[in-house]
Amino acid sequence: MMLIPLLLYILVSKYHDIWHIGMLGFTYGNALAALICFITAVIWFIISKDPSAFFYHEYAHIIGLSAIYFSLYLLVALGYIILNFTSFNRPVFIRLVAFFLYLNILLLSSKILIIAGTLLLIVPVLKSVKLLLQKIAVFLIAACICLVIAGTGNPIKERYSDINVHNDSIVLTAGSFKNFPFDGLSLRLLLWRMGNELVNENKMWIWGAGGERYHEAFSNKIKQYCLYGGNIATADTGYQNYNMHDQYMESYLQFGIAGVLLLIGILTCSIYCSIHLGNSFLLFVPLLFLVAFVTESVWETQAGILLFIIITSGEWIRSQRKTSEALI
Image (tube, rainbow, N blue to C red; front, side):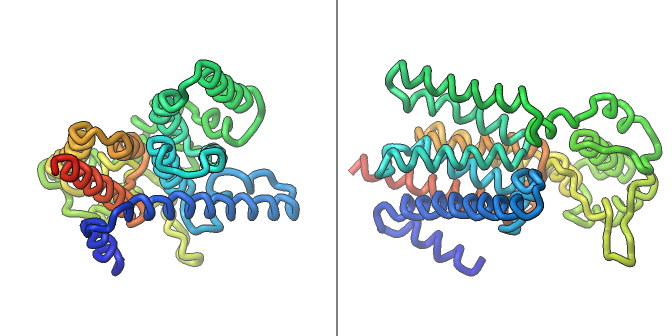
């Protein structure tokens, strides 16, 4: 945190290529972190014979970051490689790094980020490939990966198949959820329902609860719906400290309509500037966050908000400098 002002000062200074050097460090740093996760998973699998070591939170726990946030970091690094491919030396090596990053995104098994990252990056990947045979090869590789995931029993497929659509109507109407078998979707639907009820009951539509102070009232909602409230003996807090798992809902609950408009305004401004400056990577980042916000309160952690601020600030400064140099 203390070094961030220094980083921003370096960005606005006259050092050429300093941002690309920093992004190289970010990209290879994430690749190294992914390699540590993979090696650790291999060692643990040899010891335990448990394949879950290669997937989701078990895979990422060694670096102290959740699977969702690590997926987000890897996608930003992968996006930088693909959208700035000509800036890298050793093209064969960087292609291997990109493939390894995407493999790790699959292993981390974040449902929405796998889909969003793949869709957001497929167009620039195809644009970067000039020959027809290479485009066909890309399609075949992508198709084979999808077929293997869909046609075999594996934890990645299970992350999608575990969703029980019959639970959706229950969580939106039921009054008690003691021992209820939540999946990722039904839990989020209930959190959003309780958050919306809290806003309506306290008539705080415009300005919200005033930040994270909503948790005190939210704990009463958890008791009202008989959700697991934790265990004092083990310091387990259960669902009491859960956020909304949706940045839009989080902003609405904390700061009302004003907070949601501000959030949408920041994303809209970022997207507009990226299009105006013709910076594809600067466009990729807010679009990725826009999708990630649907299932995670990404900006409620330093890992999420600092990633967005530093990447967008650096790319905006670099694009502005390029524009200024072109006019001289």
